[in-house]
Each structure stands twice: as structure tokens, then as C-alpha cells.
Length: 305
Image (cartoon, rainbow, N blue to C red; front, top):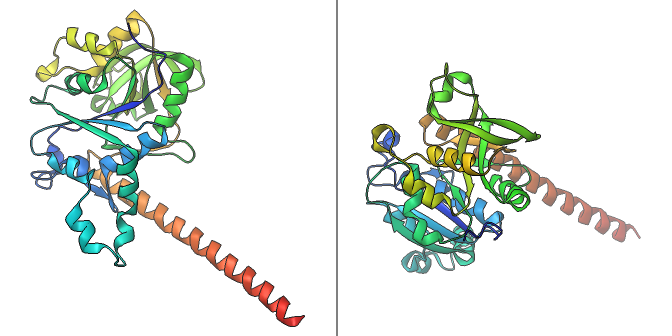
């Protein structure tokens, strides 16, 4: 029996890929550990999941990915080295993440596509609905994070959901693409789903990004899904089967998304988050300046009396 009415408690991170577009940087460093400013990509993803009320992080890794496990662990040598120094505050953020989460890991021995990577995580997830987050799709939203938006939607519909965005028609061969009926503004009931179609045959320009909420029956469907091009098991094929047997929704999320699996997207993300950090620093400076001015004004009035 599928527990589709259960809340989303676990997030699966497929993180076994080679990151070949970033070689030689990713020869010894997982692409999920590439930093945007001072945080690795996967930490942004974990923080997004935490903000959605998810505290159990299940990570599917591969050979040479121990850096991910080490990052979400206490480094006693480093703690000892910087304790009591001016640099200690740099570890505050990651300490907070580590204490709030439970991390579990498994390995994808062979690279057989995203569907296979998700299936590798079945023992970590169990028989319950779960989120899937691809760390190299870095998202930022003004109010609620993308996963938070999707969790709210799941509470209403209790079915699998994929996040989508509009892309230029000529880029459809880089994404999974959906077609469907819009049942609410920005929410589509999926009728068709194709992996990386050529622009002339793409059913739409609505592309799937690396955010999913999946019901547990997806595991059995993936098991029955035949490998496609390159021997890979595509999650889009499994989701289309699920859509035909029941219901799958596509949600046009609110926010920004950067494809950090490409150098162009990675640079754009770095520039975006750098500009955002500068703006936040200026806001904090104004707050401090304003408070100091207020104190000075009160002090002046007090002296004049």
C-alpha cells in the first residue's frame, strides 16, 4: 500500500554523476561540491529542503564522492584549529545544517540514468512520498523556496509533481519536456513527457528542472521501465507511465533557476548570488546606520534637556 497521504519527510539527492563538463576540476572533486561563493552546490540544496520542512537527506553517491559525506560531518581538526579565533563564525552555517539533518548514503555502482539513480535510493526512502533535488539546478525564490512551493502543492493533490519552466524552443533537446492541460494558473496535468526532444517535435517548451516530488509507486514503475538511449533509465519515461495510470502534475515554479551543470549557468549563478550578497550587506549596513542615528538622536535630545 502506498502512503501517498504522508507528509514529505525525505529528500533524495542523486549525486553520482561524473561532472564531465567541468573537467579537470571534477576529476577529484564532486561537481556537487563546486562552490557558489562560499557554499557548495549541494549545501544550497540541503538548505532548500530544510526550509521545506524536510530533515532526512538521502544521498546517492558514486566512486570518489566521499567529499560530500565529509562536508556534512564534524571536522574535529578544523574545529580545534579555528576555535576562539575570528574565523570561527565561518562554520556557524554548516554546523546549523548538520545538527538539523539526518544524512544517509548509498552508491550508484553503474551510471544508468536519473531513473536508475532514484531507484538506487529506494532502501533509503522506503514506502513513502519523497522529494528529489538535483544539486546542479540551483534555485532561488523571493519568498518560499521551490521545494517549499511543491510541498504545499503536494498537500492538496497527493500525487507526483515535477517543477517546470519555459525555455527557448531551440533548447528542448537539452531537457525533459512536458505537455498537458493547465488546471490552475501555472499547474498542468501531464499528458505527455519526452526526454530531450528535437525542437521540431517537442510537445511544448515547458522543461522539467531538477525538482520532483514522487509517490512511492514510482519505484515499481522504474523497475519496469526499459532502458532508452545509451542504456539509461529515464525518470521521464517512468513518470509518463505514472501519468497515464493516475496523475502527475507539472508546476511552473516561482523563482530563479541556474543550470550549474554548465559553465555558463555556473558563472551566472555566481554573479547572481554575489550581487545578492552585496545588496544584503548594504541593507544590513543601512539598518546599523539607522539604529546608530536613532541612538545618537535620542542621546542628543537627552543632553539638550
